[in-house]
Length: 266
Ligand code: KIV
Image (cartoon, rainbow, N blue to C red; front, side):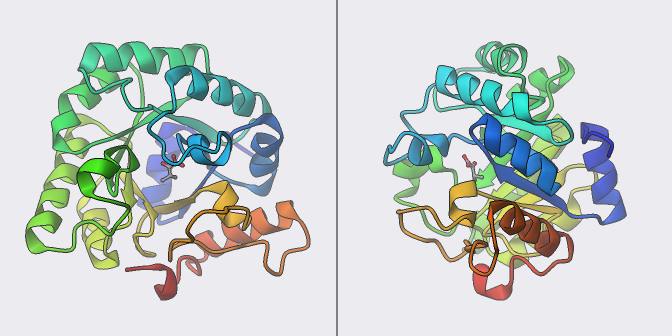
């Protein structure tokens, strides 16, 4: 099977083939997700919660993400490996972001970086993309902004907030982002943003079935999380004979448009 690349993700969007992403943090799961047919393995800063037992993503460092990306990248052959830029590693400006992204790619083995923020990040996104670093932008519920947002709650519900997210999406696409993560926003808004994006593929989590692809946190999919279970999570171990079968079921359900259902959306 051909390796997933940035151009092939764009092709998938244009051909209406759904993109399936899942987080992983180590070699064994990197290998297993690749075998199950996952397209993008994300080394998310959710590692703070599921690997380190932190109560948020805020304490995660660049060194932490580099270490876990190295482990995952050793196990992955086909999927594209993306790494989260942790809090404090990119917000000062394009140069700082470039230095951090170069480490995630050069030392960690990532092929794309993900960063949280709207239109204000456009100069940074453009700077990275012009220098050959593919960018996955992340808007909606941004866990690194949890204190400003006042908790983990649905974003984009008012007309003003929805319009602002649409502007963010357009600006980030113009700046060159390849992917856009839409986290916990109304399904109808995610659908509009997806339709308006011509090249940038949208990946949803708690954003309805109309996105170009979906992502989940591995431990949520496996029913291992001891935290609050958000509505958009489904335990794929329920009814599966083993972990590989659960991940394969997730891949099949996303590709066929069976996941997420209305019960997982807002
Ligand atoms: O860090 C993470 O796992 C994420 C999720 C939203 C997929 O960004």
